[in-house]
Amino acid sequence: MEPVVRVAVTVTFLRMTAPPPEPARPFPPGASVVRLAAPTAPFYRYLYDTVGGPYVWWLRRAAPLAELTAIIRHPDISIHVLYQGGEPAGFFELDARPAPDINLGYFGLLPHAIGRGLGHAFLRAAVDEAWRSRPRLLTVNTCTADHPRALPLYRRVGFLPFRQVPELWDVPLRLGMSIPPGLRA
Image (cartoon, rainbow, N blue to C red; front, top):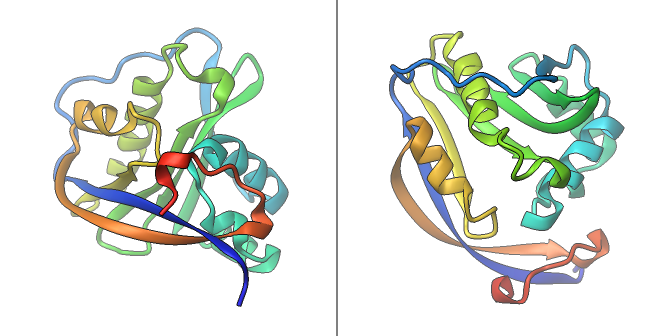
């Protein structure tokens, strides 16, 4: 049995049943979103680890390279990167495998981009991209390990919570993740 640290979180599941009626906010100058045509596992891991490291995103970090590559290159998954000033500032992942629904599987900003007025416009870009495919509904979840502004931002953009579930995660120690003391079970 692999050594793990137990992490206790409460997961909030949210959904959106129609596109937001109001127009999206514009991005600040120099910001744009690019869909990756054929994401590589090392670049994806850089994004995933850098965005999610402080928030205990561990599942994709633990996945073997071949498995991760198969996931991120699946035709029903799309990876979109926010660039500002020519460098990555965040990413989101849309998963259409639960068709006719779409799940916003991952969303976040790199640490240097937090607090620079990008979050709302970037989340709206993710929501608008998902609704272009005309899903039945759009889902996302967040948890108490995520940034404290995540849940309020999802709600401001139009997601509605419909369920909360306590979870215990067994995060492998080999990942070398820093687990905040308040999350240790």
